[in-house]
Length: 297
Image (cartoon, rainbow, N blue to C red):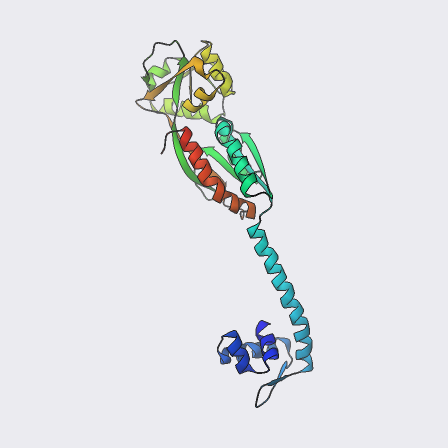
């Protein structure tokens, strides 16, 4: 349509080709195809230039309106990319929320003012399910695996530790076998932390002693501080808990218990404009925050 209007305005194929910076034969072929598609002669070819037919005049009038509408639509589409809006929902494991949630919300509010951040706390298994269902756009997960339905970008690895009461005389490092003889306070299944601990024990032919189950990690730390048992949790969680000063964090060796922390989003749905812009901001911020709180990979 732009080629056709250029020929109408220029009055000749040669001048239109010069203005458009295209080869004249290609321009002529394009207009021939348009006339064949419409079943009408749009231009009357003269020895010098062209004259517009009645059909061509009608098409030129409507065509200018169409091109103007298209250009306006293109500007609106480009504006969406420059100034994204809508909701951006991010799933964060409860144990990481203290580290990332507030800085994440503040950054998004500052850099993407028309985007509404929504932070949803949950277990990694729940976050993975929400990503697959489309309930959330982005999620931080433990031990997530990159696959056909989810893209998971590893950010860091974290070593779990044996947490004991402050007055416990144990050395700063214990083996997994030594941890196995302790009475452990752990979350119940299907909590991801419980699965990670049981998997590590089973790989070494060990069985954990779990006389008490409670899913709230802060409460676990509080119970350990009060001498009700020990636990295997993230050192970060133990130290940040309200009663964290009442416990000691012992490294586990031979073998250690490690888990990965990753940033995940769905592959099966096209990412929203807000998600595309959000990822550019979220990825470096979350990486820096997580690496500041855990061991680097």
